[in-house]
Amino acid sequence: MSRCLPLLRWDELGISMIEWLKLYCTYSTVSTIQRQHLNRPMSFIIKKHRTLIAIAALALLGGCSHAPFVAPPMPAVTPEAWSFEAKGDSGSKPLAATAWWKDFGNTELNALVESALLANTDLRIAATRVAQARALVDTVQADHYPQLGLGAGLQRGRNSSADPKTTQARAGLRASWEPDIFGDKGLASLAAEKDAEGAELTRQAMRVAIAAEVMTSYFDARSLAQRQAVAYDGIATLERLTDVTRRRFEAGQISKLDIDRLTAELGQERANAAQLKGAHEVRLRQMAVLLGAAHPPVGLTFPATDNAATGMPAVVLPIELLERRPDVRGPARAVEAAVARLGVAKRDLYPRIALDWSGGKERLGVGNGSASPTTVVGYGMALSLPIFDGGRIRANIEIHEGKAQEAMLAYEKAMLSALADAETAVVQLAAASDGVSALESTQTAGAAALSKSERLFNAGLVDINTVLDTRRSYLKARDGLLQGQGAQLAAAVAVRRAFAGRV
Image: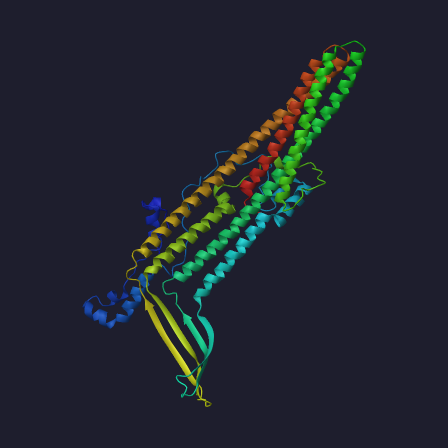
């Protein structure tokens, strides 16, 4: 009878991670033989129960080969609560676990995201890797079963010219099987299964990332299009102002210097509009790569987005976040696979048993005659045990211990990164929302100042410099507001990417 050690962290046991991995499946064995023969001499016990002792020794050598595999414990890095207020705004909704991009109420955006999830080349590559990993599971699991093969042969020969020709024909089956006595094949299958699960979780994490990148690219393109429209409006306003100034110059009311200043301002605005147009086209081409298309999307109208999506949602607790994020669960599967492969490496120290059976028909013919076919059957068992290999097995065990430790540290890093991503996204969303509120007030005041300065200029009460200064302030505030709104949308996407967990 055997039992596993309690599942405790290495820091709770006061040992290193490597020592914990070594103790991970340690067993204690209770001898029923000694309990039944406490007063018997040991020689009598050995003679009478030689078979039972051998079986017990094999079970002890097997260690935890037949024990249920339990995932390693979670490192103590998970806080009980966030450092920010996680309740969200009044009436906030919990984040959706799937299709979270629909929170923004933009049908055009929804279509782009769903198209990317179907056609993105990185996702298609990830899908092929998942298929490969699953096929590898089938390959490894095939070692559990006996191997059966069919063979046939024909041989003709003559020892000398005086001897008659001989013909030998044979056909039969051959079967071989290596029983999984110590669980090495089971652990190898488990490692392959965890690799396949990890590949699938990597694909899911990539789906989350692709959806978020499409959304961010879309909102960036929309922000650039809006800023470009503002620049064109400013150009049109400057052109009208230039016409008015030219007429006043022709009437002798102002000097040509005012016209030169407007012309320079107009050229600068046109250059700014050209830069925004180029940035917009670059963003659309980047979106095309995400969509798996050769050409950027055309005909985008950039409809309005639900403002509620930029509010602070009701987020989940840290432990719930780690449980639903595939980029955290994937490294956990890598730890399980590494521990399983460590078990496989340790089982190279144990003996191996192979069973072999063959049977078939054989016929021998001499000259033109032919003997009756005979049935040939053979079977056997082979036992191998490593005695000396120059330290190869021990070195391989140390390698896999290091890989298990590396996987555990990568798992811990993934959790820390996920927690940091979530907190950063929430902080950025709060800051962006506050910034948008301030920029809205600034734009309103700038619009009023520009309108007043233009009226005063038309009345001849102020010069062109006053109009240009107020106009620059207004355009700066309006452009800043558009950039702030874009940053707010990007932060809202980041929050959903961090907390939604899957697509």
